[in-house]
Amino acid sequence: MQTFGLLGLSVSASLLFKGDSSLGNAPVSNLSSGHGLTETLPAIPYPSKDGDQITKIREKIADEFGIEIQTLDEVSIAAPAARVLNGLEGLLFSSQNWDEQSLNLLEYNLKNFPKKFYQQDKNGEKVHIILDPTSHCGPNAKDFIITPYPREIMLSPLFFNPEHPLTAGWVLAHEFGHLVTTDSCRQTDSPYFDKIEAILGGNFDQVKQDLSGKIQTKAEQSNLNITEGGFVLPIESIKTPEQEEAVRLTRLKYGTSNQEEFIAVMFESYFLGKDYFFRTYEPFLGKEKTQNLYNFAKTFYNGKEYPGYHVIADLLKR
Image 1 (cartoon, one colour):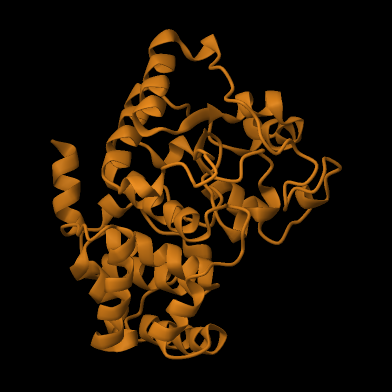
Image 2 (tube, helix red, strand yellow; image 1 turned 90 degrees about the vertical axis):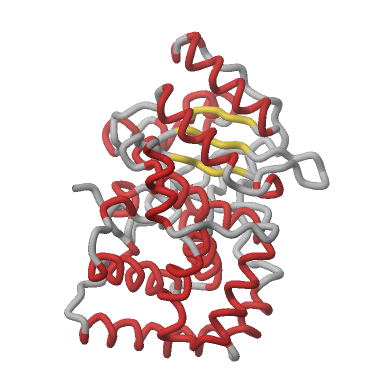
């Protein structure tokens, strides 16, 4: 069974690139900052190779949400640096392509989030969704961001499988957590870090050491294995309390990596419902801090609350 991890990279890319900065040294300009790339580019036309129906669906979604949707192939036309990663796609990544079902799933999940998650910024910069091969937006992928768009999310078809519709929304929630709170996938700071530290009651670097230790102790007491890098099974695969606890501990441990990931994990936990959120945080933060953290996440979602994830999963299957 596939395992999913939201590291700012897809599963296979995360495993491959762990501890490897070779791409960051590629002679294609500064990949971490985007310097040397064209700063503002027009929308790239959709190629006909996807098929007329797929092209129409992509255009429809882009128009409906005021975003741009492109493939890495298309981006590489305007940004040659993207070809460094794009040229490796066939060797490194799943050969699964975005099809009508996966695009419809993307559309459905976009409707499930507040408009401010994907609306243009004050400068008129649109959110660009890049289809294939990885899923990222955040500090762990900043060295591999080689597209010319500061407000972009790269989404892999691996996560937009009609058999796992809830996982698709979970992925979007996490990546939007990065984008909404930094306003650029290339930023590694956020005006919300002070708020997180205020809720947690201390400097994040100090708090995370204590929290990480408590999570590890809890996992050992429960005889559960926390996988490195936040990798978990699809959310739909959770059938027992033990499986859910393993997911919660794994994701929360990953959230202690840094404040950017802490916020993104907060976003994904909120999407899975209030009960799940409290089961995740309350054992370690206590009821009051967990409620404050939940209320903080709620402000980003414009007050919208989500039912328990099993309810969402059932609705998606209908």
